Length: 152
Image 1 (cartoon, rainbow, N blue to C red):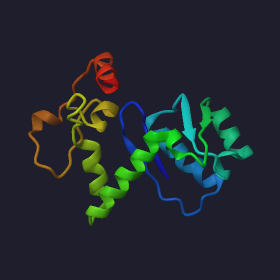
Image 2 (image 1 turned 180 degrees about the vertical axis):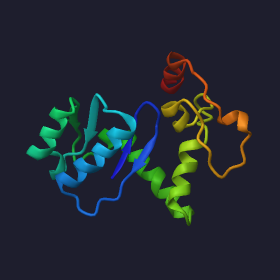
Image 3 (image 1 turned 90 degrees about the vertical axis):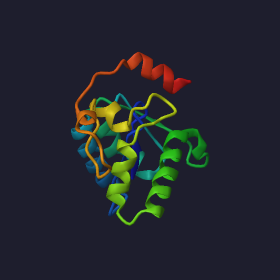
């Protein structure tokens, strides 16, 4: 299961041994514990997302659930792009975890030279790419400016 934070472009990938609602809910709960509860959760219309259990989960966690058409994946383009990004990363790498870490920690040059992890955590996490220690220190960013740059 691939999820993406629309603001930071931070991608999460979870292995689903089963694709039933309870497994999906457990994985999403783990993500919510790490990153906080989103206001809106967008999914396709898979059976696991249209169950009573999933509806109760969304209600209990006070998050709105919006769905896209299963026959028109372009309607959720951000996630479709994330899927392609992960597939491309994993095709080129022998260590899938390090490949995902590199994606999360490498700055998005086209926007504002901040990485998805920096948007999400306010700091650049350490990876295996040689980096000056000063770059790993937390900094604050102007979120209004960043949002405008992403829109451009």
